[in-house]
Length: 323
Image (cartoon, rainbow, N blue to C red; front, side, top):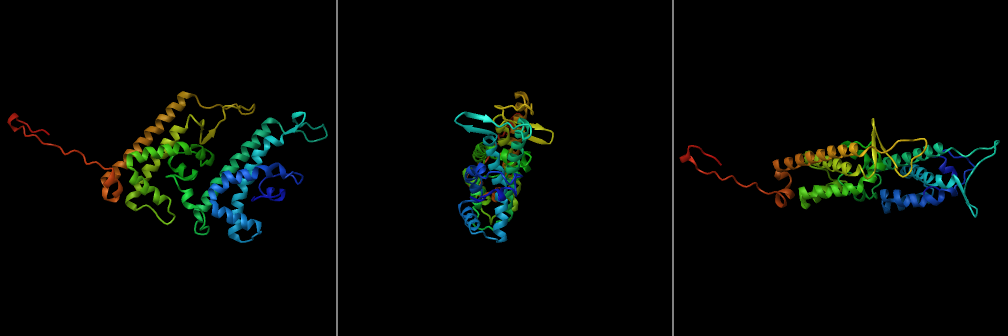
């Protein structure tokens, strides 16, 4: 594990010295397995763990360790909150209550606010970890770059450039199943050969799109983001509040936050708008590709269909000439 005691936890979460580390320890391995290792990849995660065990002081190690420990601490603590607010014994599950001269258990709204803050902070720092590795890939050469760049859009920050999600990695991760479907739709229009050629460039840390392809790729990313968002709206569910995008859990409404998911009519309108945006962007991408077929040889050779030649019919004897 990459976080082993209360002292390390206190660097990221304000807990007392009396806090029992075992309250979060059971969740740390789960968090590392589900969130940290998939981002780092097997090789880099293994090296980080080995350097941590050896108490390495190398700047390269400590920088990455801190980037990982923050989301580990917040996610683990978040997962422990429900267990730490109750006592489980042979008598059943009980809520702690202090005497007048002792600390009382936090109110329901305080607990819910803490849960909200820790989960938001955790996902923000997971996104920061992805950005950090992308910007320092030369330093961490054993990072599984290709595994982390398997989609057209591979971070919440990048997704936000094409469709507003407030840079939320939580929202981004929730939408990945729909993004896979959106990519299949795009592949159907581009052809598998051209689609795979684009994906190969994205997954190669030493490659970049030729200038002639950049415009079309930008439209394709817009189409994928817009369609992904459109098809995720009702499944999440979400609400747009001013400049913020919020996710609500319809199965539990706290007594301090009466917000509800948007009505179906509003969601339907929002879905149609984003689907239209996606269709327009994909049409623009195909137009750019077909206007410069030599810059997209995979599309030209495997997908492009020449328009039928117009056959001109001589009707001069009838006084006019029409195709």
